[in-house]
Image (tube, rainbow, N blue to C red; front, side, top):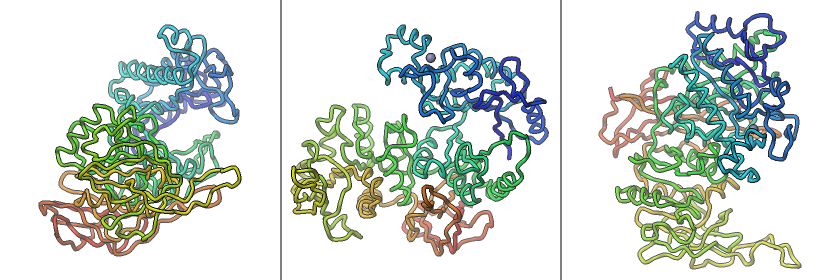
Length: 610
Ligand SMILES: [Zn+2]
């Protein structure tokens, strides 16, 4: 351990240091934070002070004029049994009070950084906020507008804390949570990705990871030792915690395990032993993790990820599908100026403004490929495809079929059952322009789903193929008429994934990594350091047990074939880390091929140029 985050003031609003400004914890008989900072300094551990910005129960109770006046006029939020029942307004006297407390800590203790948590956008209609909104011409009766004002207030407070504290210590490392990550770029020195999958499910973290890793700042992957936030009596199995941290390390994120400090101040050795055991294992591979960056040749472009870094149904579906196919990809909110991506994927509903259309056109001119699904690619007014000539299809309107089926032609039919397949989603109708290949067609049901006055029409077998395309390919652009990623999120249809895979393989024949027989439940990530590339293999399945999902053990895989792109044949050595066990390999068709004899939960395979 070299970095510790500990509360200077917790969610309850109590300080653990000698404070002249805040409320010291009533049972604390000594300067806990001060002693901790001394102990950390002796051991060379950097200490970061945690402040909860959005919640401070005790201070809110003593200063009711500092708390959020909720949009509905209540002082307390419903339901009451949450830490967010009373939240703090960023524009009242609380603001100066908090800045003073943070400065007090930075001035008096040798802290390395600040973690500012729960900077949520609580829509507040207190007199101070309303006064400022009126000045700015913001409609206080519009909840969305009030929420956006709260977000701006949170970011302004974070910026002010950063500016004031960096006057005292310019080297402070600051990390704020909750406002859109890209709006924190000028404030955050690193990002914390906080995720407790046993509590929040296993779907959101991968989306956040594939996105935040592109923001050009260090990322800490913070998980917990417990089953749920606020759970004092839980200790997750070793592999549950370890697999989370390994997923992060495979994506260039540093590991962090959160716990609770017992109020009596007692050490919980069982917890510390587990953390020590996990860190001791991770440490054996540190040299291959340090400074390693993820390699990606595909991007999922999804502007909404800015506001929802955990993704919605379509983005979660896309990320899961690509992870299962072992594609090396990033999630980005916009196409970068100098794109390293060979394929851009626009899932389900990404409208193209003029700038996006221009960048996509440039990407295609440079030989890149595009896969879009559903309404993606339409202009902002949703009247036509923004790049109709490139897409090779004309937009006709919403698709009326419910449910819609698809008949897939020979070209992309490999591995698919020969029958009309469900799309599990809505879509649009299109008409191919001359020269565009129609590779799959929509199939209509006998009747649409619905109540017809007598019958609930819920059994809707496919009747006949229509002339309307379900999949078109024009040059390097493939378009699916339906929201197949949302459909995949809905039903996990292996056929939908296979169809997408067939299209991706055709447009992207030489990806960074090919995995011969690695099962879809396993994950493979490629990272890079100077002179070498690493393939991380993970095989963990969160099992549904009752109401929860849990990982207890890794799954053993044998004889895994991997092919890593090595255009110029520069790889001279392949081995497993940390054992440095050499693996036989050969070069073929621009790839290095190896077979990994066995992997239990996690393996790290190193491909070195020397
Ligand atoms: Zn307010």
